[in-house]
Image (cartoon, rainbow, N blue to C red; front, side, top):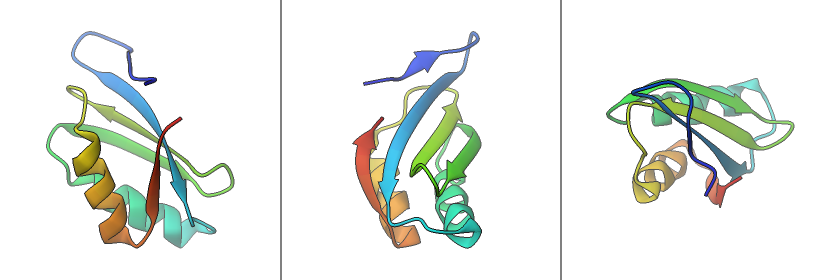
Length: 79
């Protein structure tokens, strides 16, 4: 797992998501993950399939997976 603490009170995790191919895809995934409690920032990059999430505490992978599924994509796991 590649979760790391950047500053006190924040955790950054990078996830691999399959199926993103454009800016709209990035927005859909980001929007769903951003709704999870404690999430302060989400950056999705379709070209690499990576989604970087900054949150107050480590996120439950099942919750991230459900958010990605809701957006219509598949969470591969943490990068």
